[in-house]
Length: 115
Image (tube, rainbow, N blue to C red; front, side, top):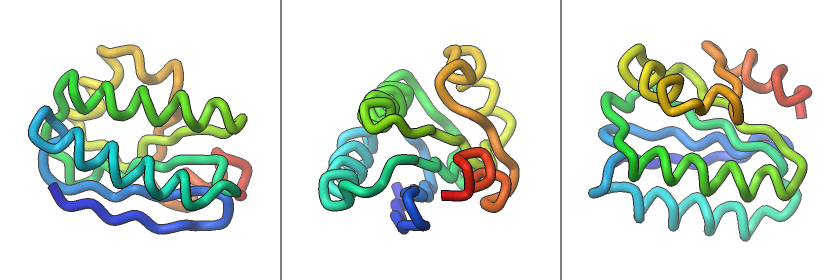
């Protein structure tokens, strides 16, 4: 799993590449949790899923757990550039109730209030 985390204002953008599954879930969780702990002024989380080809229940668990942390900060979560199979899985899992979807980084930032 390729993982890149960057801060953009009050948001973390987590770019993933590969499969978000049982084999990679712990690494993604640890890296994002560390980044959130080090950035107490981050309120929003943008998951860039453009290069994720597959997500399983372990991956969904990672997204849900980070959502809870962001919700505790009164922030928002956005799924950015999710490819069709991943987007369908997120929708089937009901994730559209807890996160918004965006096609560009600018759109994602606008959805969180540009902050």
